[in-house]
Amino acid sequence: MGQYETDLTVAGQENYPQYNALWHLQTLGVLDERNAPRGWSPMTPQKPTRVAVIDTSVAPQHPNLKDTINTELSIDFFSARLGSFPYRGELDTLDLDWDTNIADGLPHSVRLLTEFTDRLSNGSAAHHNKVQPCTQPDFSGHGTCIAGLVGARPCVAQRRLASGETQPLVLPYAGVDPMCEIVQLSTNFDPEPEGMILAFLYAELIQADVVLLPRTISDPSRIVPELGDIMLGNHSIKDLVRQIAATPAQDEMWSELAELIVNVSQKRPVVCAAGNANEEGAIYPANLATDHNGIISVGAVNAKGFPSSYSGRQGITVFAPSNDAKSFDATSVRLDERSADYEGIGVPASNENEKYSSFDVISTDVPGPAGYSGSVFAGPPRDGALQEYGSYFSRFGGTSAASALVAGFLSLGRTVAAYPCGSGSAAKSWLLSKSHQQADSDIPFQVPCWSGTPQFPDS
Image (tube, rainbow, N blue to C red):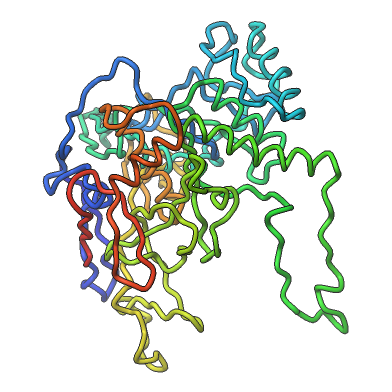
């Protein structure tokens, strides 16, 4: 799949190492040192593994994603209550599991499922109530990075030269399973329970093989904001601010959503990011993971093989490669000694500097000025040709990136028939059977590896 390197050298700090932008795939054991598949062969499956990604929207025009994103099924729940289809006209050819019983026993979910299937089955317009989908590039940065880590495909794009002519440009970037298909289910940044119920119902209707939720859901019954004892005049903020309670109907729907996620996970794996603030027991809904369901909670491990400083340790199913972050608090001192502004004065002798890694995970980004990596060109690419390629890729990280890699790992397992389908628990058991224990600290943790044991390039 070729070499694609990134250089983190900064002015005056040439000791930052260069690294292969696919190092995370080598660590997972799916690629060898030449970036060639290890123990599996690329092929064109008759029925590609389907990964439902519940996140922001995506940039399907990215050269490495244009053959990966299923634009016929991708839906946007951000703009319209019952969803808009950004890339199609009439809803006349949807191949869905109309007979699903996933919502049985959940009255609000049953009602929503009935209303939703009525909309999808009557040949109505793709844009619900004529509301345009909210899938502009400005909203698509996170979703595009996630999609690339799951299933980007190496490709040959066209680059536009200053003369106006075009020339071939090889983009050897790949996700964990470059043969899968991704159905993007874009949702609000702070969704209500109804929108998330519809998203999980739709993942069931399209019969997704893997469901990925690379972020949190702000369930008010499970996430309580912590207000510091900050004084404002003569009053504490705690005295001036109170949380607004959900209505009884909202409480019921939040409870149903948790049950629905567990129900979905019994039939197919549900991969969730565990959080980026050292959350004890992981964020919601990753904290729903147990030995008796198919929910997979994913933490982050850096390129040296240590848990990333922001990743929790308790209640996490597996850890996958990601970036790292500096920390300096009562429990952890992990600093970047290569940084130009590093100052060792005051750093205790028992610090963890040697555990910090400057390696990021590299992924696909929204082409042009939007996304995480901008562009000097104001508009989108012309005629599908790249004016530059710096904005097409970006540095990424967090447990979001780690969860995307695990979803891709499960997808690859399905694609090459490495584990049988049938339940989320079976997929979870297969994943754990391919994971290796890292016993470098007081709490051992599991890292998936396709072949052999994980090799960390910055160790």
